[in-house]
Length: 303
Image (cartoon, rainbow, N blue to C red; front, side):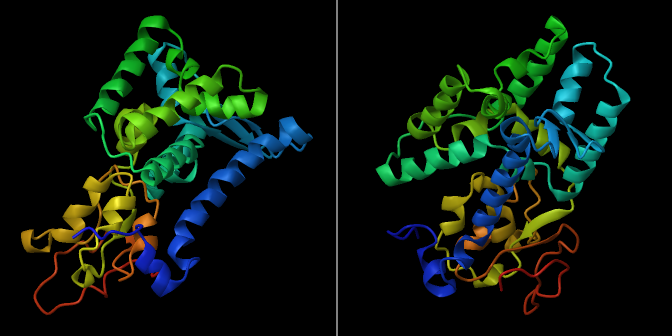
């Protein structure tokens, strides 16, 4: 049953506003802090991080390279320097552990734009939506690599909203504003979560990268679920929740194993019954009658 109230209202009443928004606030802090580190140099001359999200050097020591950009470079026939390869391996290793699409929720600046569009869409009561397949992003991902191979350039990066917004904030937006506005209006007027959940090839790539990632959201106390549907309403990828939350009768464990889960933590925030928590992908055994799942491995948070 969907209740006629704002998602998370019951969680706010029971846990307080801060605890009911803890992971959302943590994400915004992460996104803005990462952005600030890149802006300190060009804006204030404090060069902690040089470069952008595609490739950067932290404290003149730590190289970081977007593995998706590196893959495009290889498809274009360019042999990257060893520093770039090392940076891509570091980033890939991190997201193999933390969850590939954690990049979307915790790093990507466009996520703040699309979250804003979704918030406004809900406030305005816009419910109509064009049908977009979630598989479209994978076709676009393949097309960007084919385009790189055909043009011998990183052609996608010239129009990639993520790259353009980040470079625009550092060096001046110019026409990047139009592209960012287009993404905002797409999510606001055309389809719910259209860009991040259906079209973005960056998210598609990171979902593949994090297919077997260790850090997962677990519906550890799913027997306490009261079907309020708040977790589904706030989840940017609501299809990923149901198997873990409702699959006990089908022998499915409590771990959200879908590669499209962004590990955003909003389901943890808005659940008044504390059904969800962060933990590992291990111990994903289905419940047995009379047996609690509280012993399963993981990190207890906000309980």
